[in-house]
Image (cartoon, rainbow, N blue to C red; front, top):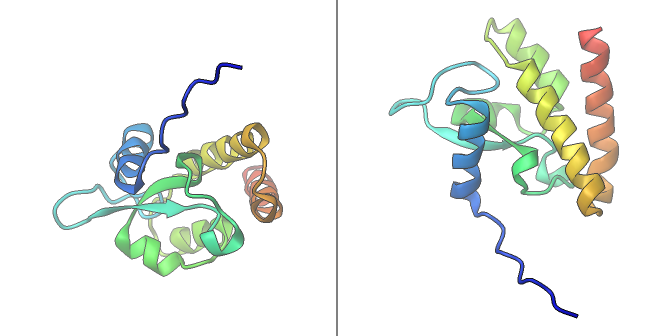
Length: 130
């Protein structure tokens, strides 16, 4: 049986570049544009401690401040905190990313620990939008 060799998965800096291309050069949480004073990081929507994979589908661009301050808080909880602070979080990008992660998990399998967390965050975001 002939199998094509699988390419190596993208590294952290490559995933950051791809996330910036996909989602734009702004923090998804506070809306600040990236530049010399606001450095971009990859933010795991499902935190690693909750079983979130280091896949592009689980990562969005965030400034270092927002990434650090969010910690392990839920997506919707932090989204609402950002709004309380008067920031401009991008709920549409977050919803799209959570849906893409759900699709990636369904296609690739595994990620048992992340599924319940992901499903709960998607439900809360949908309820919030209704």
